[in-house]
Length: 231
Image (tube, rainbow, N blue to C red):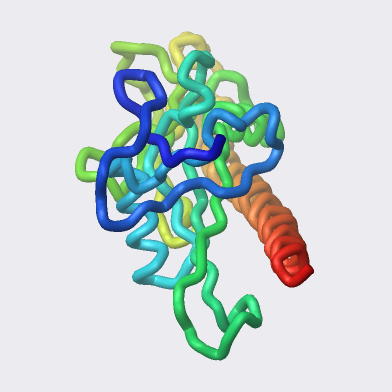
């Protein structure tokens, strides 16, 4: 049975009473994600804020770090959503620019960053931290730096992700600080700058590719639904 649900204390329960619901009606791949079917995205403040920003701007919008309802028990389960509003005129339903629905892609932050870092790993002695500048305290989305360590070298940059902004911070590790090679010390700022540049490109390509695939899948799905409703 299909029901509107929300998450409370780690358990899926029937959604509480409210004026408007934003449930997940269709999801791919189904078997891995069926727990999220019917989940009211607006029942969570972070997700609701992303929906509202996407509708207000008409653009793909990135959420802050969340844990997907279908991945509550998974390790390294920090993810973010890329939500895109769909309008009736864009879908050919009518000429009115009225909100029809949303497309949403869920991306695991740890998996995304680990793959991106592996592609541009110019030095294994450099750590990466990603902060969401859209949140009040610059919420950490990802980090692989050691705790309680003050780095000798640091490079900061920003990355535009959809209509949000991430802060990237690259720091030397304790291993690197113990090296006494003056030539490497001189080259480190260049290494950090290159890593920032290539990491940004790789993340952008991955997100753009995922968004295009998501748009194609959902548009084809909507067309199929229309055809079945007509039959």
